[in-house]
Image 1 (cartoon, helix red, strand yellow):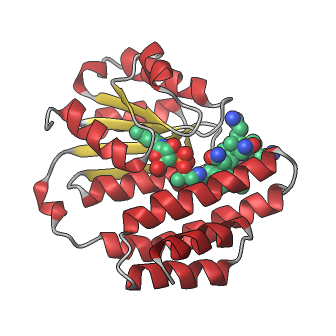
Image 2: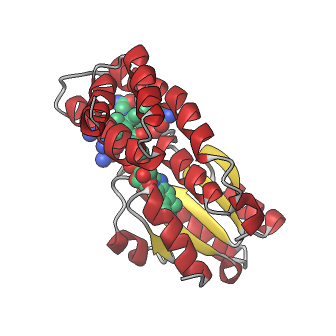
Length: 217
Ligand code: B12
């Protein structure tokens, strides 16, 4: 099977919510030397987006959406193992707090960002999903991170990103951290409007943006 074919089968397996085929083809791709990032960006992400489109068109329903999310979460462990252990931990580029904002339980994208930040030498504290603004602000005071990353996948939870920034502001620690925002409906314009320091469209760009706000690039 060619590299394109393997990536295509990964995408298809997600669209069909076929756990076995997904696991098999991800392993096959990795064995054939397809980069983990290519598998993520060209296979897994478009596969999930396609499921989202089918859901929006009422061609698949909530159970299928849930299943697609579950099988991707499972297979990410395999991809993660491949990305780990490149020695980047010793780079010590800074501490990042990552959270999906209140009311939003989508965490696959956030976890991907975490994976790549770690693989690039950042330490990451994962606060989880549907995290309240107050909790995030408290953690900023307690852990003194250099960066806070906020994920939001629903247009209805995007305002919660603004709420986090306002709460951090009110806590008097806004100057001490850089704030990055992301998630499918989020744009650079939105990031600027709510006073975030940066935005990225995907996990690879998130690392570049983190480096930029830290002054590494
Ligand atoms: C899987 C999925 C689910 C799963 C989530 C499982 C999980 N553990 O995450 C489940 C089933 C739980 C779910 C539930 C719902 N979902 Co849903 N879901 C999706 C789906 C198909 C894929 C999301 C995903 O993982 N994408 C793949 C990852 C890799 O991409 P990503 O998340 O965008 O992340 C990348 C970038 O955005 C960026 N990024 C992400 N976060 C951050 C953070 C920072 C700081 C930075 C810099 C970058 C960054 O980097 C990531 C990696 O490259 C999307 C479709 C879509 N187009 O996104 C719908 C989608 C997001 N869901 C949607 C909806 C409507 C819902 C529900 C309301 C459905 C319902 N009726 O109950 C609920 C809401 C639950 C809640 N309160 O949060 C809509 C949202 C519409 C909107 N604009 O608001 C979408 C777009 C589907 C659609 N087209 O209708 N969903």
